[in-house]
Length: 111
Image (cartoon, rainbow, N blue to C red):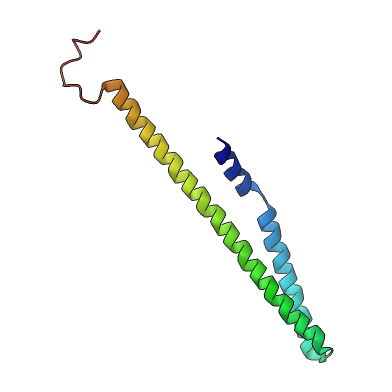
């Protein structure tokens, strides 16, 4: 089905992992820049920029983790609903094959 293919495509997509990796590298760069800034005591405007950019980076990191968690929840829901559908199909197949309210012993009368 289209939903199944879309979920598989989302899970196989590496874009969230790329975003996580780039955000982590940005945060490490900003922490290094912040340390250099505090040691050198250079431009205070640059220090404020580093702090604010670090906050945005942290928010992006949290958003990326939330998206990844949402995808895993969607995949788990899809897996559970597929298992439920398979079980229900098996039950209905048995009901339709054997009859719902057929008294025992009526097998000889069929045909």
